[in-house]
Structure formats: structure tokens, C-alpha cells
Amino acid sequence: MTWNEEQNSKDKEIQEHLIAQGNLPKHIAVIMDGNGRWALARQFARISGHKEGIESVRDIVKASSQLGIKYLTLYAFSIENWNRPLNEVGGLMKLLEHYLRQELDELHKNNVRLFTIGKVSSLPKVVKKLLHEAMERTANNTGLTLTLALSYSGRWDIVRAVQIISLDVRRGKISPEDINDELFSSYLQTRDLPDPDILIRSSGEMRLSNFLLWEIAYGEIFISQKLWPEFRRDELYEALYNYTSRERRFGRTSSQLASGETPDRKDSYFKRVVDALKNS
Image (cartoon, rainbow, N blue to C red):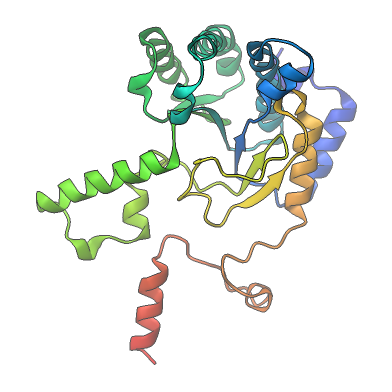
């Protein structure tokens, strides 16, 4: 069965009510935090928390697909996570390998496209191979785009973009005057993804943890007190209900939005200010 076919009537009713709000996010980003604390609170090894966290990943991916969410980005492993104990890092890589092997058929059957961002070259060879195969196999799927942020950090991607832009300036491909928000975004690894509408973080921590620092500029933020292994679709629904009640202004006032004026996020803010001054 597909995920839609296996859904129970009560859950479908909740989702239909959410969809009826007419304001669901196009792109959800998630910082999956609290696996280790969940395990330690139960006197388990930390890797047990990561294993239980995989069950949360499964449920959130399914619920997002059922809701018709187009993009879901999960912060699975940061560049800084390489500094954790070797046994934990090794266990995480094994879990990632297991997830890719076990879930690919089901993801593909449910029209999910798999994508990744981060310094993938740092990952073990077997994981890189599985990721490449999974992305190739699901490349033409048109449902949910599931992006795994692996060996990723926001600062790393920004610095990487600056380095490449500098090389292109030196080579004469672009001039400094060409650099604006839109061009800079095109050099980031997230260039094929829309900016997140909402960033959800589990575990109650109030940090961005070096995740999508450029892209989250106007994203809404929702903090759940649940540790990630406890975060399932009901917690996702709570975040989405909260999101649909918010007014997103993108630097404008409520009255501007009420008048129908909408922001053009592709245009550079500074360019618009300069143009306005020139015409005043």
C-alpha cells in the first residue's frame, strides 16, 4: 500500500482540516535534536536514541507527503558532528546506510525525490554510493522532495559560495556589480530549493545550530519541547497549525499586506532602496 492508502480516517480528517486552512508551508526545515538526551534519560546508549529518531523521520516524511508538502529538509548530520566520539559517528553512518537501503523502495513508490546538501565527499564511500543511487532512482519523482543535510553547515556553504564567486570574478565570468541576493543564492547548495517557510526544532533548544543561515532569513521558527524520538506527526500538526495562524510580513507592515502589496524576494533589498532614492 501507498502512504495515502494506509492512512486512518481520524488522521486523514486532521490533515484535511489543516489543508483547508489554505496556508500550509511549501518548504519545512527541521533540526532533529534530542536523540542523545532521550537515550540517556532512559539509561540507554546514545545510539539507541538515534535509532528511535529514525522512526520519527519515517513518520514525519509520511505525514509531510500525505499533506502535499513539496519540500522537507532534515538536518541529519552537521560538519561539527564529526567531532563526536568515534563510536557514535560510526553508528550514525551505519544508521544512515541502513535507512537508505531499507527505505528507498518505499520512498520511490510514494513519489518522493531524494536530495542532499552538504560536504558529501566526507561521507563513507558506501554511503556516498547509496546516496548517488537513491538520488538517480528518484530524480523524476514529482511528490515530496526530501533533502538530507549531511556533513552540512550554513557557514561552510556561505564561505564555499564566496570562494566560487571570487573565482568567477577573477575569471571575468561576473563582475562585483552583478552580485546581489539572487546571484549569491544561486551559488549555494540549496539553489534548487525554495527558502524554508518554517524551521522546526525539537528538544526545546533556542538555536539555529549553523543550519540554513542564509535561507532562513524570513522563515518562521517553531520550537517543540519534545525530544526528536518523541516528535511524531501530532507534533508536526501542532507546528503547522501554529504556522497557519501567523502573518508573514517579509519586512513590510500589516497594512501593506492588507493592500495586496507582496514582497519580491528575488530582488535585492539594497537595489530596491537605491532605485527608490534615485526616483525620489
